[in-house]
Image (cartoon, rainbow, N blue to C red; front, side, top):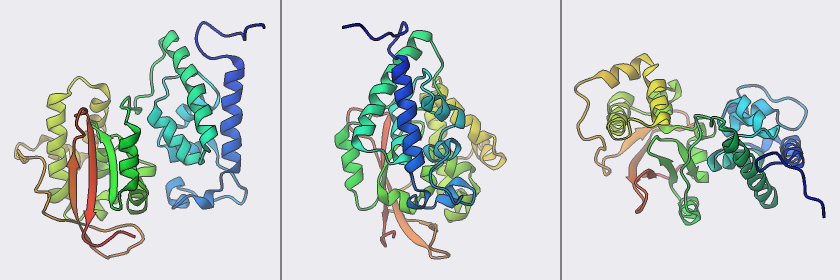
Length: 287
């Protein structure tokens, strides 16, 4: 049997064609009306025809149009599992399509490593055990896992309903400190939310100061004048995590001026201090 032709690395022309067909077909059949808050997340009125564009898919996956386009075109790249999982959710891939995407993307990664191509700066290399992902999915409160850079790695359905911004903003710190929506939703934004989080960010900068991705988060935060002033404030709290039993107040999308009280619980899974498991425990259930 003749061998399939490959380059010096893992992928072949047939692999690249396969990933292109898979993703194009998934985009074509995806009904935007099945996506919660589609008009808000995609920042445009919906067209009459079905399917998603590459630009819309990239927004839902929280990456650049170029990075998603490279994947669909089958170009070699260091595509992280987190990024691929975001594509899976955006396009509602079946289990078989998901396994195929993982296999093909692995070959593209191998080729990228051979060619020493640069990874997308917003991707995370953290891997989460499936048992921990299942634990997050089964929570009845808002729950998610981020890495030490505050990049979102996984979250449950309750998180999407209460925090739809997670679908278009991949970093918790950047959303809280720079998004105007956050300053409206999070009551007493500066003192109850922003100052403690900037203190956490400075603490992580001291510990992981050489991490390129964390530097990018800090750069984006400090590009906002208000957040930059907090970063330079010498009187930031020394204790960056407030008492978890002290409720914080917030508004939620689709609930108007109704105020919710919630307690924020953050934990580090044993064996991986680079991860953060966060639960938002509301005194009255989010719906």
